[in-house]
Image 1 (cartoon, rainbow, N blue to C red):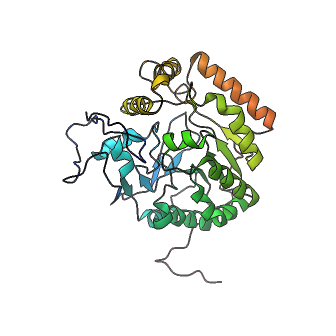
Image 2 (image 1 turned 135 degrees about the horizontal axis):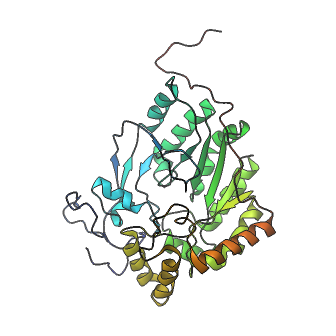
Image 3 (image 1 turned 90 degrees about the vertical axis):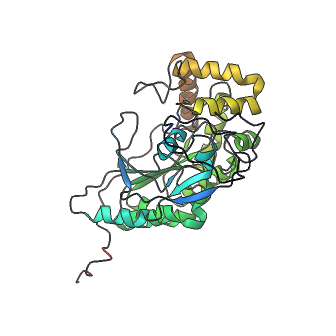
Length: 351
């Protein structure tokens, strides 16, 4: 394992921990080191774009992920270990070696055109953020939304980037057919903490602004106060809910942080760098909610945790949304208006 450096500007992870699959390994270019590594974007040649899941913890059956890896660099991100399947590390690699699915909109259109395809609500994205910074240039998420809007296909989005407001036209069109809902993730109102915790995501005030813009456009929008990290941001729950409600959020959700596999080492190093005096208290509370592994293995317990801190978080969240007059569940989206998108290789319909 590489020794964590004192700090890397603009990165959530300070090093590359060893990965689980030792036979797979991607080296840096000559002269490149974790503290100086530049972000690189690599083509992902996946032949399909919709992933199915059967987890009882997740409120969706299928997801669509235009990117693998995430520039936002959130220190706590549970998705970091997914990069290990590609030969990368869950550390700096996860936020600096981004796999890009350039063909995602075309693959999505092809899938929706299949006579056997039956629409189910998609999560965009189920793993990494669909509006990470490179999306401003590549517009892959927008391309996918264009297909979904054309097909009036139900989709739920979650992001911590103000860039989603660029696509308010498509989201408003989907909303007209009860085919979309959006969660904006707001973990803290403290801009300094947000910059340390989620270094390349939008500032908290910009995320609240995104809620306002989406709400005014008629898009069902809520706030995800996730993850809640006991001992670090749990006390902010009432203020987070109040700020989101004032911006126009209609519903809210939360999860309790979990640190699977290498994420526990990355987050521990992050605490050593930014909050050394609070490290043991925070890690001990996470252990009390998620067990010795810091990531509970049982369905139904992983996302909310167990024990006294989990119960206190749930109670504080429940009281906060009740006081704000917000719903705990997003409004239902449906496929009632679904239609096949245009087949660019087929004949035009005759009227």
